[in-house]
Every structure is written in structure tokens, then in C-alpha cells.
Length: 160
Image (cartoon, rainbow, N blue to C red; front, top):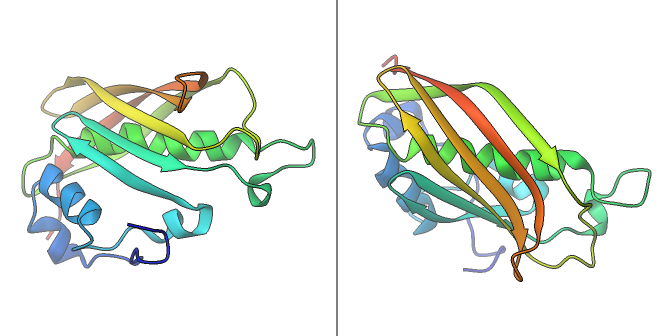
């Protein structure tokens, strides 16, 4: 699906609560639910979701650049935060939600408009009753590493 065919928007709370985590993510990928507005703003999208795993794709462009002539580190941080959080989200039952408590990010090389497409992949490390952790990396199509990260998320019952 090309970027112009994707839909963007905020899903009503009751729609979110009517899905388990993996079902919700797969509905976004299938185009049945909108991608979050942040995806449109930065030009990235959810490409894969499986139990305990999620991936987002992006192609760094000049619009992502900071004042030192490379893509802002916030792009890598946003891609990894999204992938790590959605890896946790993929494991939620109906009626559960989560929030990020902390993210640890390591930037190992700069993203530029010459980098080409990159993929941020998040993988669950641990999913407990109230806490989940995940890890992930940001790589180009040849497997070159640009950043890696971990997160801790709190899981709790969603308020209806």
C-alpha cells in the first residue's frame, strides 16, 4: 500500500478496546483502521505485527534533517519507540492497555537522505502481569545497524 492510499486518524477508544493488541495492529496494516497521525507527520508506517513483534518502515528524507545536515535523532527514537511499544501492544488482551515508562536509545550511525529505507523492529523480552520489556534495532535493507533501544512499559486495565 503506498503512502497516499493509507488512512490516518485517531481510533475511537471503544474501537481500540474492542480488539486484542495483535488484532488491532493487524487491522491497521490491512487498512481497516487508520495509522496514527504521527505516522503521516514523519512519513513512517507499521509494516509487520506478530505476537511479541512489530516493525515500522521509513525512508529518511531532507524533511527529517537537523541543523548538522543529518536526520534528527528523534526520527530514530520515534521509529524505535513505536516498534518497541507495538511489540508490547501485540501481546495485550482485550481490555488491557499500556504506557511507556522509559526508553533507552543508542544511536550508532547517522541517518541521511542517502540511507534509503530503514526498518525499526521491536521484539518482546518479557511480558509480565503489569510490566513488559522489549528491545529493538533500526537497520537499512542491507542489515547495517543505525540504532538500537530497549523499553519498559506498564500494563494495566483500560478505562472504558
